[in-house]
Image 1 (tube, helix red, strand yellow):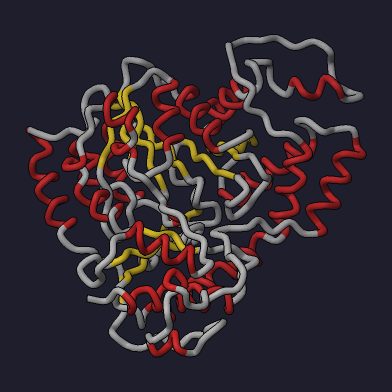
Image 2 (cartoon, rainbow, N blue to C red; image 1 turned 180 degrees about the vertical axis):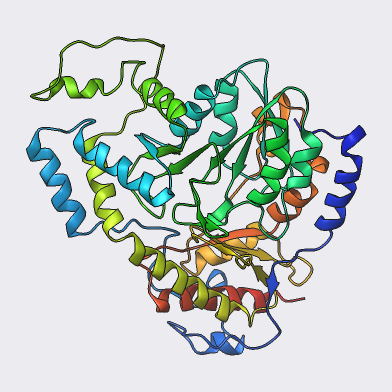
Amino acid sequence: MHRGNGSSRRAKDLLRERAACSVWHRGTRAHYTGRVTNSDDVTRGTATLASQGGAPVRKDYLPIAVPWIGEREKQLVLDALESGWITTGPKTQELAARIAAMAGVKHAVAVNSATGALHLALEALGVGPEHEVITSTWTFAATVNVIEHCGAKPVLVDVEPDTLNMDPRAVEAAITPRTKVVLSVDYGGQPCDYDALHAICDPRGIAIVDDAAHALGAAWRGRPVGSLAKVTAFSFYATKNLSTGEGGAAVTDDEEVADRIRLLSLHGMSRDAWKRYTATGSWYYEVVAPGWKYNLSDVLAAIGLGQLDRFDEFQRIRGELVARYQANLAAVPEVGFMRAREGLTHAWHLFPIAVDLDAVTIDRARFIDELRSENIGTSVHFIPIHRHPHFRDSLNAKPEQFPVAEHAYARAITLPLFPRMSAADVDDVCAAVAKIARAFRR
């Protein structure tokens, strides 16, 4: 529930001012000159839209994301199957160790999803019905669901217009004596302002839990995401920068918290209970807490190990694709796009654009429909939490409490971005965006 009066009035006024205009980078009114699949007329703005009977920019559909599973991953999965360890076992432990090293922390627990990791993090920190957890309205429902699963009260805050990450000033305005955790969200792969968040939270004894589902491989001022919060949750979902199909991890430098997460992730069974099936393990175990079944299997962990071997390559390709998007779309003034802030490493999980509704005669939904007609896949990340019926009603959340998120939601479109894309694919997407923008230019 957003705090909408009293001490937050100054913050609300500031947010309204910041929502008045978008600060995403915008192009200039120049012809797009990228590669065009079907017609050079697109570069001159005279091509007929596919929705009106013209040839689509692409002959084949380009989805928003496709996982890249190579021979290394396939061999590791086969090794797991032939080993007899098809549930939690040595490959899961190896994946966790490598993720911890990448994140710059001592402990990682591999689990079945980032949702599970977030839930376990809050439970391990003792979040309960007497507490509030502050989080962003610009996120996927899982971020807020886990707060409610703990019995706590979600407190939604608005976002910064240039990053769509939670605004630290809105966070500070939302704090009450019941605030136990600030649950940050590193949107699209760009880390939140952790200097500001720690300056707010640390003196008050408020823990930061990081929803870094988008941000594996990102860094804030040289520090890897994973080392910036009390607990960080990563996602290994099919479309993520590193995929196990379904999967995730909770990482932390706190041994006690790590032990608690590990315990709760598998029925509350005593540590390393899976080893009871090894030659040196014991049959005896104890259930010391009512846990959940959030464990990851070795078959899926094997995919992750293969992905880790190629992760640097994946990230390099993502960066190159984003640079090409930015160069091409700089010539399309009807849309804006994000740039990484100075001093950080962006993971570039997503590449969102914002349609300038003052520059075109159609809305965002129609723009998406036109892209689909041109055989370009898209999505919207995200439908703000306060717009979903359950949260709107249970939190009494109103759109006017979140002016920046509302402004962004009316304009945001996520374009395809995945390592199997080619430069020509990016050019096709940009050609389609330019074609539609010109057709509906005011």
